[in-house]
Length: 243
Image 1 (tube, helix red, strand yellow):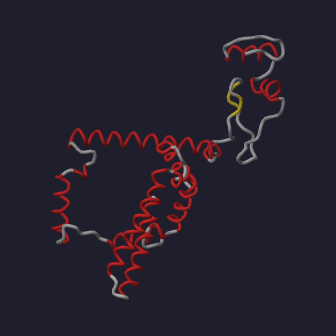
Image 2: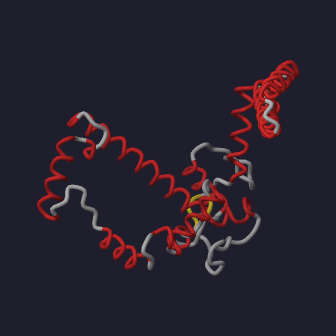
Image 3: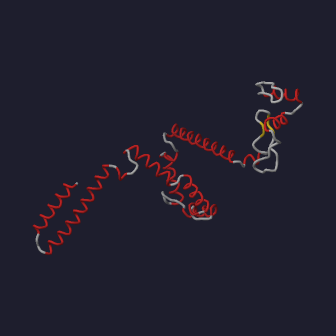
């Protein structure tokens, strides 16, 4: 660290702060405000009512004035969200490993013992192995979310809209194009040669079937069965040659 007043240099922040205090009669905060910020104490960006607290001469000021304001910032929320995701991922992996060691399955619900005990309990209580209390489930959803099912509640609808915004249809379209380009060398399926040939064969087949139906209808009215076979043979030959 280099002193902006006299040019004194020291790598240790504690020794540098002592130099500022002893040589220039300034506190660490006064030196930081005058020679680093070139301004007064910064205000809290959240409440904009209180000044931020000073931490050290190297770090400067805290991001916010208090813990309450700090927890309401987007950076803090993102940090907590990432930490929870990591914790849940680790917990899920630990649960899976424990179940594999104890039961040989990734979940206790997949074990034969659990299935057998669950079926026996339902049979004893409700006289039905596959019992599912839908009335209780609907009552719980109404109490918690104000709807029979979660997807019909306001919270469920907002979550669905948020998911659509996070992963819109455009993303799926881009992934589809990328997969087609890697596999066939084309982003549009209609440009692939094999698909074009298949469509062409299907087109001529449908056309020949329609023509044959018309010939049959016309010839049956005149009782001319040989004409039916002859016309159909000629037409199919032509379509096969064109294809």
